[in-house]
Image (tube, rainbow, N blue to C red; front, top):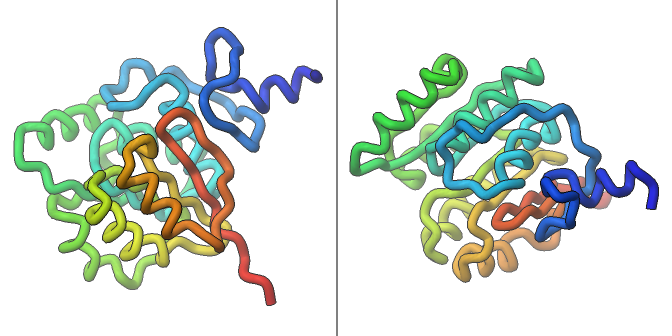
Length: 203
């Protein structure tokens, strides 16, 4: 196997063994993301950092705030990509302040528009906005995840990306099987993170 083929198959595993999943792109430049507080496994952080680059910039919509917001914003900044990053979360505890401090720590506050509300309540504000990248990581129940997908997936442009986290959970997996066919191609999958690209419809 050629060296580039190995990089294609094994981009994130420290021991160069195949991670759970697949990647259909060669690794762009990477930065150290280990100090970001995020509920992401090794390999998921790295894939998330590449998503804005693979999508060609923003607008980006993140359903479920946290370390993912920092990683996505850093990618936009590092790769000099245009477009707003909107992050939505209905925090009911102190985590909102924790993540606000983390955004300030990494210097991405000015690049993020955070909306403190439920994804469903915010939809009317964003109904006329189209996104190049949508990250779904809010309500992981089948009903909640499907509602988010039905509301926001149609707002992703042709050739844009939709990424789901926690795809190992039954509800999320079911939504993917029901909603992402037949107009979406699976382009990346690492551990609990899957990424789909909207294909152009045949004439």
